[in-house]
Length: 206
Image 1 (cartoon, rainbow, N blue to C red):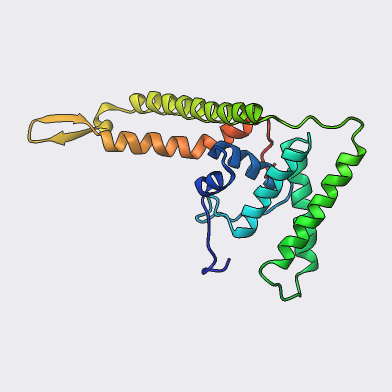
Image 2: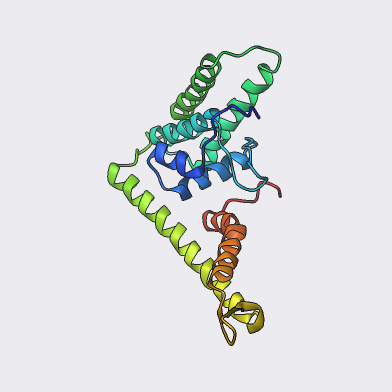
């Protein structure tokens, strides 16, 4: 990975697409399952490149033009990206043309898909897209709250002497910072798995 290359977070992508972060994670999981590689900055958190941004934009565009699922759109994008990458291994690339070539190939595949559909797809209305974003956000918050409750229950089961800290010479109180850190780590470690379960997406490593 080029150290000088600009990298983007999940929130950055969500802002660019005008969607919730949970939608970006859903797209990323589908792309990875389809064989598309996304870097992880520390082995855990995804770190997106400009090419990844365009991949998400392609997926969003495909879904806006057809009735195909997230997984089907991800398969199209991943296939075209991997094909283009293999063909360009020994070629000096410009910054724009290869990306345009990939986009052209993806759109051609989408047009072919549309032509083979027996009935014209019903495109989502602005209201339907708004409801989808709301549902994604509600799903994200429901999962976060559930994980937080689980973490707090586990924290409460830890022996009191491990949860408390000294305050002055004779008094102890719960270590709030340690508790919050425990909850945050618990949520971070399990959040993506719960998202996969919520949307029925298999683990890409399985």
